[in-house]
Image (cartoon, rainbow, N blue to C red; front, side, top):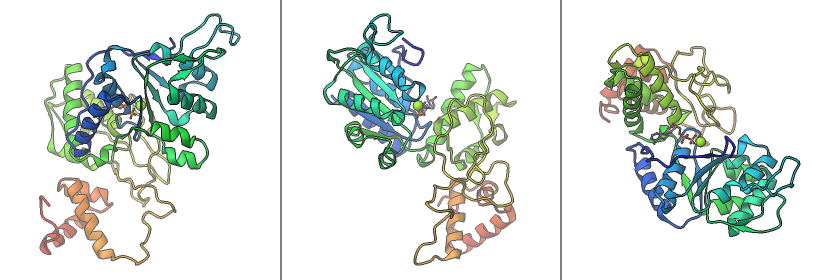
Length: 370
Ligand SMILES: Nc1ncnc2c1ncn2[C@@H]1O[C@H](COP(=O)(O)OP(=O)(O)O)[C@@H](O)[C@H]1O
Ligand SMILES: [Mg+2]
C-alpha cells in the first residue's frame, strides 16, 4: 500500500470539540449518518474546518468501525495512479504491473474509504467513481470482471462543487450522487463559542505534550483570538496555540504569545510563514480593505464581492452614520468590549473608537453585554 493510501489504526478518536449550536448539530448529524446505511457521504467546508476528523468520526461511530478506514487524496496522484490505487489492477495491465493488486475499495471491504479533495478528480476518474457509487461494482485496471464490495465512501472537498459544475470541471450527476447525504462544516468564524473551548483544549494538549506548566489563557488573549476571523479555521487555531505554548514564558498564554496570520493585501496573502502549517488556506476571501495603515495584527477579512468594491452600495442607498454605528457595535461585540482591538478591526485610533463608543452609550445603542 502506498504512503498516500494509509491504513489508519483503529483507535478512539479524539472528540470534535465545540459548543456552538453549529457544532452540536454537526455532532448529532454525524452520529445519525454514521449509524445509517448511507454508503455515500459528502463533507464540505473550508480547509481546516475538520473534514478529516469528521470522516474518522463517521467511521468510528458506525458498525464498520472494526473494518478498515482508508484514505486517499485525489490531488496527490496523477490519474493513472489514482485509478490503480482506488480500483487495483490486473497483472500485466501496464508495464510495471508485475502482479495483480487489490485497490483501496477492495482492501476496505466492509469499512470506509475517505476520498479527500474529490473536487480535484479528473473527468475519467469522476466517471469511474460514479459508476462505482451507483452499483458498488468496479473493474480492476486491465480487468474484465466486475468486483463487488461493501464500502462506505466519504468524500470531502473544500471546493464549491456547484461552481465547478458551472465551470464544466465537475460532473453534475456525480455531484447529485455524492450529495445524497451532504454534511457541511461551517467555518470557525461562524461558530460562536468554539474558539475559546478549542483554545483551552489545544492549550491543555500541547502543554501536556511539551511538559509546559501553562495553565490557562488570559481574557485579553481570548478577546484577540475571538476577534480574528481564522481563514485557516481550526488548523490555524491549533497551530497558533501550539506555537504560543512553545514560546510562552509564563504560566498563562497572553495576547502577545499569539502571532496571527496577516490579512491579505490587495488580493494577495501576506501570511506569516508557519512551521506547522500543513496546508494552504484554500479559497481565502479577498481583503476587506487596503488603507495606508496596516496594523501588525489586523485580522479583518471580507467575503469575496462580485466586483471590486468592498461593499456593494444597495440600490436604495444607505445611511452612512447608521452603518458606522452598526460596525462599531459589531466590532465591540466581536472583541468582547475590548476597545483597542475593536479600533484595530476598524482601522481607527483608540481615541476615535473611545469617542464613538461613548456616543453610542449616550444614545443607548451600545452597552456592555449587548
Ligand atoms: N472540532 C474540532 N475539535 C478538535 N480538533 C479539531 C476540530 N476540528 C478540526 N480539528 C483539528 O484541526 C486540524 C484540521 O482539521 P482537518 O480535519 O484536517 O480539517 P480539513 O480536513 O477540513 O482541512 C486537525 O488537527 C484536526 O484534528
Ligand atoms: Mg483535509
